Image (cartoon, rainbow, N blue to C red; front, side, top):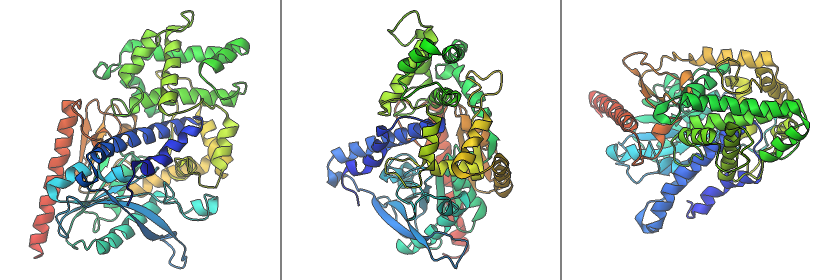
Length: 516
């Protein structure tokens, strides 16, 4: 059991030693930063009260088969989990299983936000399970292709099954106790799929911001970003969206001009290296696009460096100070870059495509890594999710285009664009895309979140329900409650509570029927 908060925070803070490189990497670091902030701030408050005032979560390790689909393969790995049993009513109580996704899972996963805040009402045991190949649950042998073939959502679901059985024995959970899965983002998809594929083991699932439809070209992401930048409810406006377009046009103008204009751009944006190569320019434009997209995706969340309202204020007000000869939206974008870099502890922005490829090719697990190589592998072999800006309404640059993103799969893993497209189609065929057909699943989304367009936002049947929360961002329903939470978010959380109440009443009735 960990007893010092510093031990929990170290691996996340180490990412600050490196520059931001690939656009998807920037979004992932934003996500890790926000998760760390929300989890650690709550734990810190509890710990300040003295160790006697709070029950600390317990950490454990499960021995899991590396290849659960081949009994003759005796290789195994250690999978980390966390347990919060302070509200558990005993062996007949429900179990809330919080699934990890494409990153590390810490003690806050069972102490802050839901499902932890929902546990006291029903005396639930709360367990979180780290995803194989992420965090500290990385099998021995590194991350080469021979190993990565054991990394997929199907392998992760097999881990959920064996963990469900092993943890039931370990904690002496009654065979009649309902297990309810929770997850956000990719882990939200896993939660829905766990109920879909193993309804005899998982009683119900709450799937937050779950992109259950795989897609190669995710241009819809920027459709939502563009719309959200114009939403007055969250501080956006038509002028703000036009300012974003103007800022990106200025960046592209300077890149095309080359020479002194390009050198000034490099200095003003805090670039780690040169912007001479076209592929590096595309990396820059992608990183800037991710910066704006991140403000929308995580709008209004504790720990977010910039909200939509703040970003629009910078773009329309010019960011304060600076050389007034520069176009105002561009100066605002510069200031936004500085704020993001400072918040993430980044020394500079790296736009080197070659450096990105070299880092992604490294097969030794890095302590400071947030799983970039592993997640790229999953996008190349299952999901796609490559954000593009091809529509005329998109406020960003058309770079990086889809071919350059697919080229990473080729350069890093030797996987062709056609094989990636085939993998995306197979994923949708296997899970059902946006019509998965799972019963007793609640899909929760916010309409500000760009990922909601790949999820289920309307009920598909009486036991396949959906909740779309107005003006809510990515996984916001899972975050710890705050006094500033909107009335629609509070109502959304009440609806989740009521759905759980219905499910657990059903579970109790079924226990009575079978004479438990």
